[in-house]
Image (cartoon, rainbow, N blue to C red; front, side, top):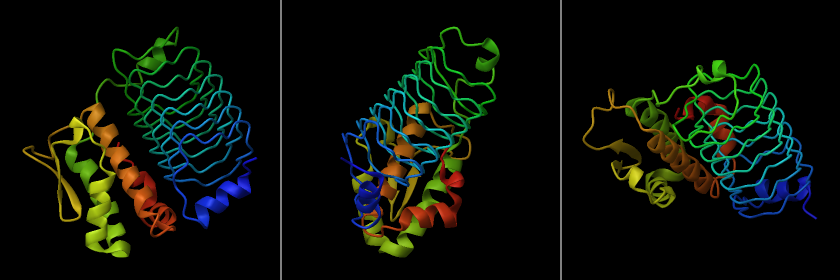
Length: 265
């Protein structure tokens, strides 16, 4: 049986960051810190993750149905295609989270912070968003709201209002910090290996140990929803892979950079 102590030991002392498909059904993970870990496809049904620190975690395709995520910090995480049916996210930090194609049916999200969250193609039937912060959260024509109050929908937007210049300044600030610990060659290596293989990032170019976008006026060009989500995913992959060498890197970034500023939305 996987315990809170065993998974924390793997993460903290063994520098383990890869937990894809792990079965943590019903596990007591209250307050666990797994920032920037890869939990893609994990089974977290009925797990207690209240107060957990899950900044930048990859939870794509995970099952979080009936899980307790009250007070959890999921800022900048990838929750695309997740099942969070009948879950609880009260008072949670969901700033900049990618919830694309996720199912949040009948989930309680009261008083949560969803600033800059990606709700495109999400299923939101019966979601309780009372007192939630929705500033800068966005949706698209395929987002399913069910019978949600129209007043809530008016707080959302249909396009990203973040420029290339703003996002890359935050991204490259992280790169500069990592370079101090790993050096330019390793930083460049991890930036290259961490980049998702997608057409949405073809216009981004790696120059030394920083990222630029080709053929645009970066101060006036607004990112698309998919570009922003993929760029955030790239950053999270980069931090996760770099932290396999310097295992304290997530804490350093969160403390010294203040991760809210590195949440690209």
